[in-house]
Length: 586
Ligand SMILES: [Zn+2]
Ligand SMILES: [Zn+2]
Ligand SMILES: [Zn+2]
Ligand SMILES: [Zn+2]
Image (cartoon, rainbow, N blue to C red; front, side, top):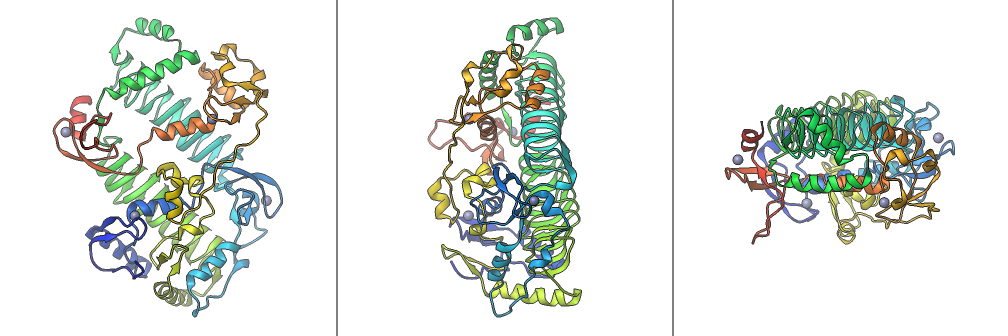
């Protein structure tokens, strides 16, 4: 278990984390070689399997759980990805991006006789981190949001770019006047949708493209005025896939009473049952993909096992590319916007190139390894919290030639002296940071969003865990007493603390949210924002792919829908290969 991984051969390996077998393909070796040459450092194949690598990267980020704490520089109270009792120095966005301090103040001399990993850990602990993972200079009035850039007037919005007046939504690119959406692109005035692209006034729908005035639709493209439909193209005035005249449709829609909370519950139940009766495509994506596998893929080519990706080319095992494009990346978890050659890295964006074993680096960064929060950094190694610096090791700047010479020594140091974690696992050069360096308990990190894990399992893999603490809310109203329609709802509801219908939390309605629902003519939700978000995530397929057969032609397919269990019972999904699906629905 503690031997240095073999560097040169393809074939099966045992994952050092889960002990399961995984394969290093010839194409993987070619990729490591290409990156090694570009970065002039020999990168060995990873010792963890792809799934464990993804969990490890995601365990270092917390986009969705915010806490109140004071800025360690100005003392101002604000929302943060770190709770007050976490041992981390954190600055508010204003302080972090200000010129009043510089990461170079924390520079350390490299000590050749000490393990470099230990020196990195020292720097890791003492450098100030961003309280919010926000591209502060490009956002306006988004204090209650995280992982956001180029946006304004957003509230409890996470992992988003180019958004305006959005509430309780995440994984977005270009949503305007939207609420309770997950995975939305270029859409406007949408509510409770998952996976929408170029939609307008679309509600309670999933995986829809270019739909207008649609309700409870799934996998519909170019449809207008439809309710409860699935797999239809360019239709209008359909209810549960049945076509009506404009007049009939309008009459029927009125009878369905979509303005009433009670009717919406009934419609949702009916629609979801109806959706299940129709086949699903082997993976969710659009026809602009060429030669790809994975789930939720759009406009991508020649790429394998992608997940929630738009505009990837020659990539493998990449996730959350919300802003196209990315090229030549592997084990890369978003967000994109012209990123090339990112390997084993997370939250890299905006014209960055050649980034390895790093996270949260953006704006024209180049050739970074083991870097965290380097803004426009170039040729840095083992550097944390730096702005516009080049040729640095442990935050100390060197002349160009000296930097490359010293960096080669550091790489050798990391190959010779691994970091050993509490479980005795060793990390050599070529591995991401050890999970025990993360500030976040597994269940509060992004990993839990996409790879559910039980407490015991997480602890046994070296992650930490924190039980949810329930607060006192001072409840003033029960969700079941909320008015059935927006017409019956007064402004006074803004003063209430409402008891969520499915968890012990209390929640408030904010003014912008009420105004938006009025515009939609929709009633208030009976669940707190956390429960609504949880329900949406539960409907997403996870980044795990299975080999199974097309239900129609029997062809082997790769899909995120798990195969029916052996010995019968069957899964509830009917899955078709792309060809059979298109033959039937396009
Ligand atoms: Zn593994
Ligand atoms: Zn501050
Ligand atoms: Zn709740
Ligand atoms: Zn087929």
